[in-house]
Length: 60
Image (cartoon, rainbow, N blue to C red; front, side, top):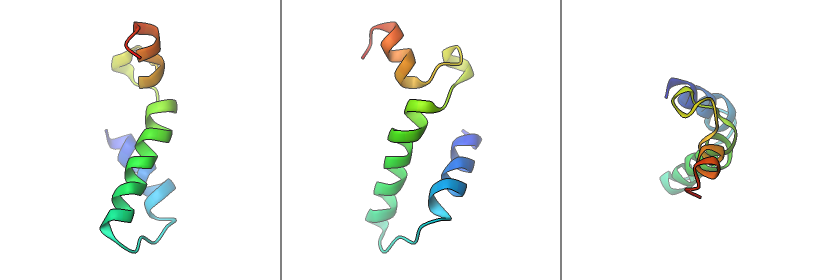
């Protein structure tokens, strides 16, 4: 979880100024959906990304 917040802060939040909470919320959601769920590997998932794990498990 700490690495997600670290990448979120360095790659998304610190590089952009949000005009509203809704914009910030949408930016965080986008980061999690596009970056974390597709590329970040998790040890609890056998070092697969969540999307790859779901595909392999037949959940997607």
